[in-house]
Image (cartoon, rainbow, N blue to C red):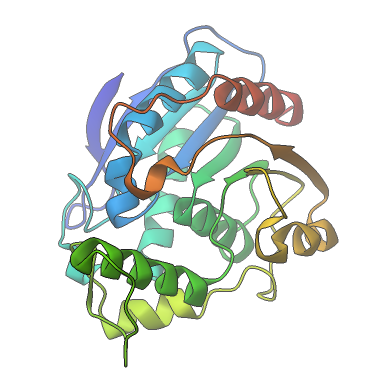
Amino acid sequence: MQPFFFGPSDRRLFGIFHPPARQTAQDCGVVFCQPLAHEFYNTHRCSGQLARALSDTGLAVLRFDYYGTGDSAGAWEEASVAQWLDDIGCAAAELRRRGCAHLCLAGLRFGATLAALFSAERGPVDALVLWEPVANGENYLRELEALHSQLVSGTPVAHDGPQQELLGFEYSDRLRQEIGGIDLRVNRLSPGRHVLLIEGPGPPGEGLRSALELVAGQLDFETVPVPHFWLNYPSQTLLPGQIPQRMSSWIAGVCR
């Protein structure tokens, strides 16, 4: 595990590189795109567990903090979706520089959404792993507002308008507009040749599976009975073993 800074000198990003535990013929690197805000902190331990597990199978993994988040430069109030997509591009270039011939983007929650948008708007990647992606930005903001109200007042309350602060993070009008304009079901989405969609039990999330089936070269779907630990679960939550096992075997199979 190698912590380091990378990216433009005025917008340095903090990353942790997990070199492959053993050499593989694929020379495949995985950029892990983390969730946002409170979900980033709730999943921090599991993200590290996932990166270490993937590297143990022979994959190079880079997890990093977007600009304005975590230990990267900037403040949350400066952040934007466009900037975060640039950050994913910097992380991908860093893995290429380290010799990864094949590239996979793997993301959780809004990180998965950003990975899908990057693949569609900034250039295709060899593989894309979407773990419980946020398909609709407006619904996501409403979920945050409802959770914020529950935590603040103890009971759900109606709002006349959106709140600026949600769960300790200020969502500016610009950021709200950017997030609210995202709908992976109808946006022009060309995620690339190979896509793995991982969702929990129950109906497919917001119709995303059907939309991906129309545009992905190959779509694989996995149902994993994992609790929504990104909401408000204790930091000691352990990552279920089937997640890294399924991801690593799938990535190794398609990145050839």
